[in-house]
Image (cartoon, rainbow, N blue to C red; front, side, top):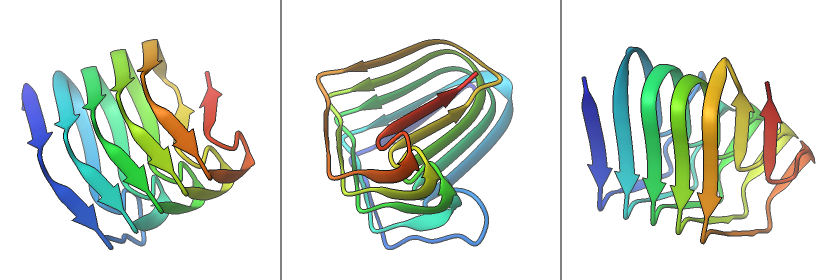
Amino acid sequence: FSFFEINNCKGNRDSSDGNGGSINVITASNSSLLISNTTFFNSSSSLGGGLYLAGSLDSVTFLRTEFRNMSSEFSGGAISLRLNANQVTFEECKVNDNQAKYQGSFLFQQSLSVKNLTVSESWFGGNNAGSGGTVTLQG
């Protein structure tokens, strides 16, 4: 795909024994992903309780998206990224009550290469992890 959009959706009580409780995207193309006006809640997996994104994406944008009560057995309670990307953006997002046993209850970025990571006008609260209570970035 060159452009993938998820808009006005709800992911609830999704789970995976592997990666990405609600969504698992692994791509080798320089495509774009937009997730907007969407809520993910009560989901779990080994990595990325809600979403696991890996490979190469030109841009990833989360706009007015909520991540609530997500959990990961290891890292990335809500989202785990293992990406080559030019831009990853979180704008007007709500992130609360997410859990990760080890790192990043909201976001765990085990970077291949993310050139720009932007978080703006977003709210974080009640997140818990072994380290990086809300965000863990590894480069």
